[in-house]
Length: 235
Image 1 (cartoon, rainbow, N blue to C red):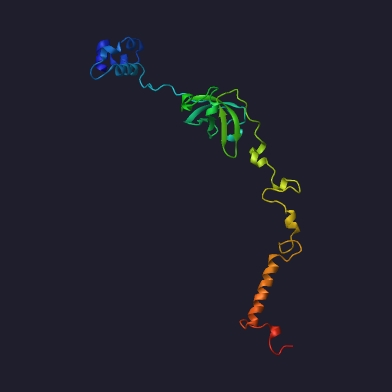
Image 2: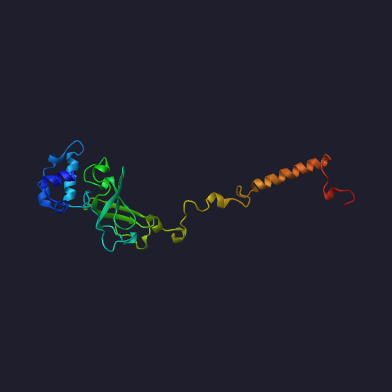
């Protein structure tokens, strides 16, 4: 193929390489045959024009914001540039340069209803996103492609979550009972020491009386040893 091109131009190989004017003036279809089709001939002419060129399209990369390097640097309301790393049925994950991908939920991808997130973005796309919320303890970042969406309030100092902000048992006022620590009811307060009704011996007293009556009946029938008070020779 190259020999045919050199014969058509009448130039040496060293003179032909890099000669844009000569190479672009050659019709590629003139050099096609059973072995080399039009796309192949076109690629050969481009390679002779720019040796060592990369035939792949230019690779676009995101310009990460300076000073945003870790999760704690993010704040709700920040608008950042990132690159889509993965697309799922529920949304897309975007790398914004903090070593933790954020999630753009499918509902935050467009003002219109989105049935398939892949119809909006694909892996490798460079996008601009807005930070909606940051959960540092759980390493979660919520993002949106709609830059006019309202972000959540400022992240609490120290990254405390809502559950941590709730008052614990020590923080509750005196007399406040929790679900698992209910106070004693009036009925239990009125119960006697045996746990039965007020003024009575309770279940324990009834059990003791029954055992005493059974032991006395067995002694009378000679089936049980007599008590010390009933043995002969004792006053």
